[in-house]
Length: 355
Image (cartoon, rainbow, N blue to C red; front, side, top):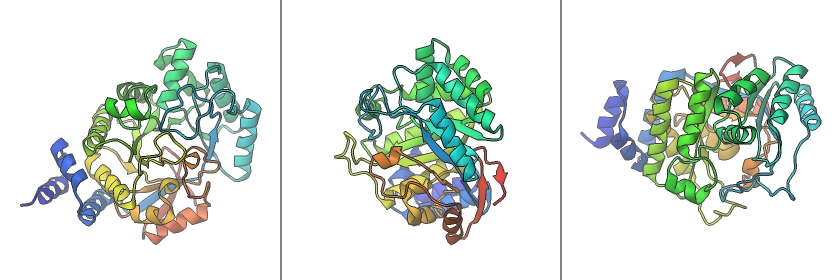
């Protein structure tokens, strides 16, 4: 019996794969077999529904003290922008006029913003409409708030939740390997610290996504170890909503010599993630990173969520993404239907909304 057949047998029997199995999967060039197995797992998890949401991005500042080599979005204090609370309120009103009630809020690590700015931001948004869903602030930002305010991570999270925070995005995870982080984001919190922040959030009842930024300097072994670290934390907290693989876009970064990814890399990562992350319900393949055509194909390689309308997305486009900066709900439905799936609009907690 071949290695893949043995792994397939374990998956079909509902048995957990180990690191050795993961390394064999990630090294495989048999993309169709990977996709077929991932599709079985997907169907077992969610049936034939595929998900999307309607959201508007608010990147409140691009000023960042870290200026990571991987990032094309961040700027120094003198060159960057910062939205006032009134400007953020206006963006929320713009979204509501478009019938959008979910806002994704992340930004750089501004050296001078007080924690009150962030609490007041959330309170003002919820005051506009209490039914608005707010997914905001990566684990890296939350750690920054803690250091600047002198509050513990738990205190920061509790105050953000009280102010209106509904869930946390998965950004800042990159690849957990210390070797990799020293190259691509040397000033950013460690992988262990990222996991610690998420663990505290989950135990406070705040759900989150998880990401992996792949296709730069990491090895396949480091990819697998990253996935297994997420799986281990999910065993403990059950707080991750979705895993979101993010293909690295090197243009305009200090890592522009990296080749980035191709379609084969992307589909293999999605399939292996779906097979290995047995305790995650959802694998999200963002159309904004993949393009519409590859997003359709990814729905046959373990993906069950293609992301949101993404109005005003700035970060990946600063790094050279060639996809549109936004997409209509009608177009997202078409992508899903082209893959012979059933489209379902949800919020980030996967609560269904009427189309």
